[in-house]
Image: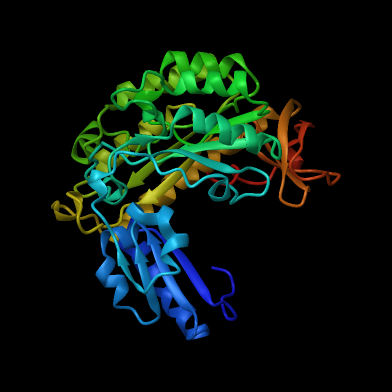
Length: 390
């Protein structure tokens, strides 16, 4: 959080994915009020949607605005203090907050085109605070990308469940069709997909990504576990063999692509044998990096009431094992890319760049940020780990 000591207004966009995230929000509110008691605080986002009265009771909080009313914040600020939270499950229209929300990164804007989720994974609170899946209208997306492409070389398309874009009744276009429209109707030089669930990775989508350099050679595919028993308790809608088939298809179409996965360790009831099954499955996949998370109880989810809690020390041990495996994946991938020429976008102060296949490199000579360049891949110039997660 930026310095708010001289601010008249502090707006906090909250997360509630874990109990620890809730505590981080409460600490941020207390810190803001302590540093500037005169400032009025507005809290929005997922925590605000889930537990508005809990936040409204904190000293310094003037407004609590749920995800149902985020688009109305400018108007709300001119009204009396209070709480404004509706029934997120009744949301059917995508709220397009526009270009300003996309500009979190000055060289790689993140454009949200999908919100909500219809799945009910047992560990996840997101469907209850973001509502059902809904898609931004394709014409609006084309308009936004066209405008952003005038300023930026790379645009990241994101969503809570991005692969579900276009799946609502009445929409006849799917994600691959939208990408074709963006390539045909805008001047965007590179699109990057933030995260796609495995069963949304159709052959059509993979063929399209493989057919053009204007879509980044990078696919992030959440796994969560390589154990079928754990996947079943998680209420995931695929099994390990289905996931492995999709990853094999990615490598078939895109031999040099970055392939990443989310993995959750220490889920309730996860035995040592199930963890080892998951570890062995992951080790057999052609991943180039992993995002490893330690399970944390989230009140309000099915998993929070499940028996067989894994001791925290054991959860952390399993996390460490998979992080080491992820680091080994990434090192092997960087070594495999050594000596190759790759397209990259310059980022930050122009001393670094992010390649199409999600490797962050240091540049020997600084360039202007927000430029597409070719880099000769030298292992000595590569920072440890993958680029910043989207």
